[in-house]
Image 1 (spheres, protein in one colour):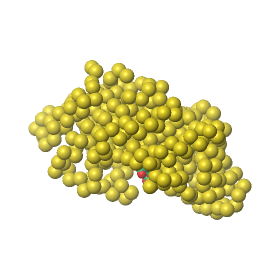
Image 2 (cartoon, helix red, strand yellow; image 1 turned 120 degrees about the vertical axis):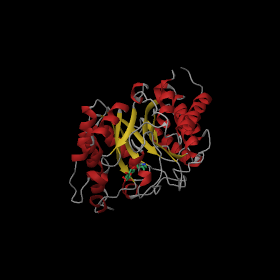
Image 3 (cartoon, rainbow, N blue to C red; image 1 turned 180 degrees about the vertical axis):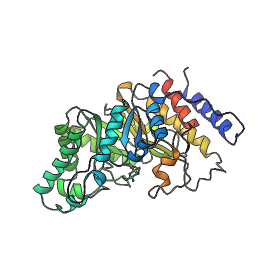
Length: 354
Ligand code: 9MR
């Protein structure tokens, strides 16, 4: 079946209309596994403890073909206060991926938001800092060499206002552009086969942030840095203006590099009241259809992967302390693991021939 974008959105609206408040209706038919519909990996972020739940693990492996660790492959977990490494949970995520035939995307090596003690102690110590920086990247990328197909080498390099590069422990000690270039080089040294990404958010919401991100990409490429792809997280709201995601993907794709839609969720916004959804859920479903269509509009060779940031609504970071939206339902499966219309519209979009 070939759906136009408009008909995909219309079918999304129809689905949501019959889904709401229709408790006596039979349960909707299960969706086909998303991973079986797309020629690119369909990813999901995971926390190690959830992999112990058989229902979670089975749904995850049935639907998805790639994993990103939600936080346990970051320095905040791997690097202990005494400078030692802790690989138990990242290893078990990697083992799960291998056992279930799923790809692994590494996330993330360098992030302004994490400033671990062992590096703080080296602040201002020139070569000692630079050596520790290299050693960390070599150790982590080296450990998953041959398994991780890709890494977010530097996460969120651009400031919130979109105007400049973030200053951080890393940029202070290794240089503003240079800490990114060094990190890419070290990752390349550790695993020449892994595709290396920089990754950021609000590239669709804030065109000025996208422009700053793209100027960074230009500088990195001009200096010969081993940058292989661009990650656009896509944490968006149901009322993001139409066309914003498509415009971002088109601009980012202009470098010819693969694009990872790397952390998709579509929030129902502040103070969402599930009993009184208004038109938010319908618009969210239509937005999922729009995002999937925009990704499918990329040249096939640039569709690196399409990753959602959580499996069930109950798993979302948006309900937690940093999201502060305790009633949000931003994902593809409900709290009980049932596919929602948001999953169905992705299945429709991915089934289309490109
Ligand atoms: O969803 C993640 C949350 O569980 C972690 O506590 C947090 C800190 O590690 O990171 C969240 O994931 C972020 C991702 O790594 C980078 N982009 C924004 C994501 C949501 O905050």
